[in-house]
Length: 162
Image (cartoon, rainbow, N blue to C red; front, side, top):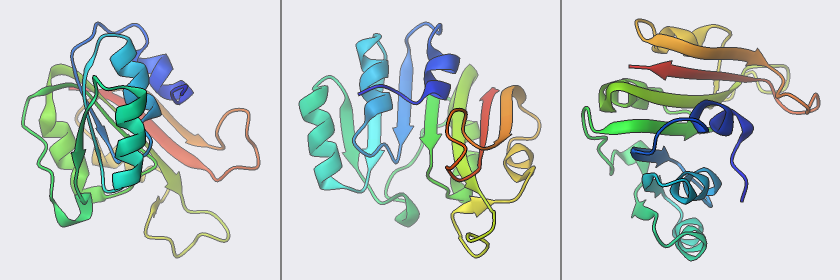
């Protein structure tokens, strides 16, 4: 269960702390963080995905919740790292910002609009992700095809420090 390379790039040298993995799926990022000493809470709406995650990394605390129904509240100023990858729910961006401790980092990757996906509610326009995190220190920002995968959908990714 290797993490997304962007998570590894940004969080690889960080000292462990409290991490929140939103819409974690089977939890490859959560497992990677836990194996590096992070205290991780992973949130997802899939019972099966969370069961798979608990088998892979019993130390990861899991929370079954439908984020769209606001069944999970992001604690304010409680997290050293928040990860939200390939799950777009724009009303989570402000709680993500507020949830970071001073100096905390958020890593977000979302799909971008492109031909064939113009009507997707799970995509953002160029520059839009950056605007959601305006006022925060941007560590890294990228828009385009994922590195090494020119056939994949375009993404916007950002890492910010509170």
